Image (cartoon, rainbow, N blue to C red; front, side):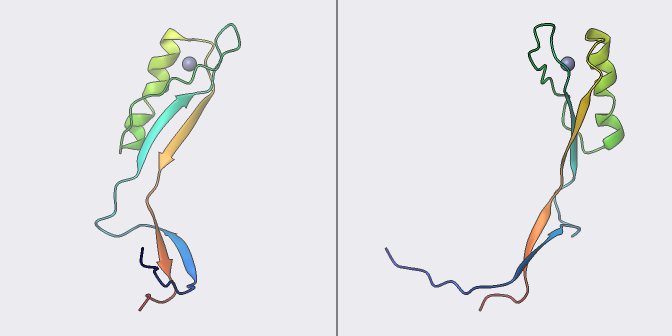
Length: 87
Ligand SMILES: [Zn+2]
């Protein structure tokens, strides 16, 4: 198997704000526990629109009124950018 030669480069991570970047996605996950102490873990649907994603906890709490703690999970595209392009 041929070996590849890698140069050591300085890399930085930056949020991908390019026009063709994938959209940011949001969902909410229930952090409540069932009566036996088991984590609920229910998740709402993934939405690109933050306000739409925020509707799910209100749907979930109709069924589980003790589940009042939630995590907002966001998928945010980032880019790894070299200080200079490898030659
Ligand atoms: Zn729940």
